[in-house]
Image (cartoon, rainbow, N blue to C red; front, side, top):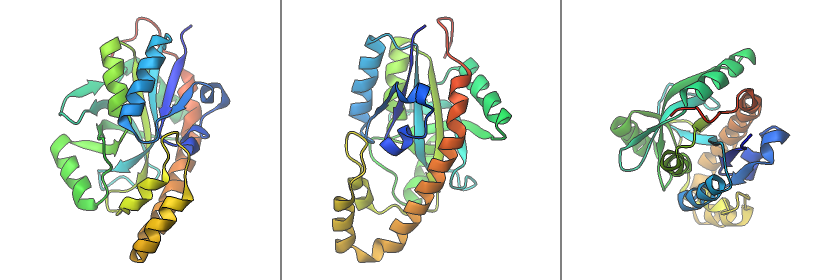
Length: 230
């Protein structure tokens, strides 16, 4: 049976996965180009399915930190929408329900750059009608669609729609998914007024990761077969 590969941005997200999936998880570091290159490599290695998993920025103001989104489609930066596998999605939704969890269905927006302000998030929500935004799903979705490989996207809100994300916080994420304190501390020294926003983001991140840890076992409930559709 072909393996399912999981794409995350951070190593902290990878650690949320069950051991059986962690062995097939790769960190893209929030870089769409890296995610796309890794996805091509996984497809070439015979991947039977691709999963985009991790935190996302909230676009829908009704979604609190830690809310789960099981996407039915990923909207690319050019506006094209790529659907996820319906059978796989239904199986994971049922497994989440068995664990007492629920995930919203809807669109995930993909961007090459982060949405950092409430105004930016609101504008993106209005344009594409997405619930959340991240920087890996669209790259993985492009590769999955081109190769005819089933796609699944499970995300947890890491910063809600009304949260400001300090731009320098993104410097703390290395391309391989490691977190680096030094660039964030340098940014904070230059912008000390951003401390409350940075602390709020840290709290949100912890809550989002807790939600991912609870939800991740549901990913093992189903493995897409050769007859799966998108």
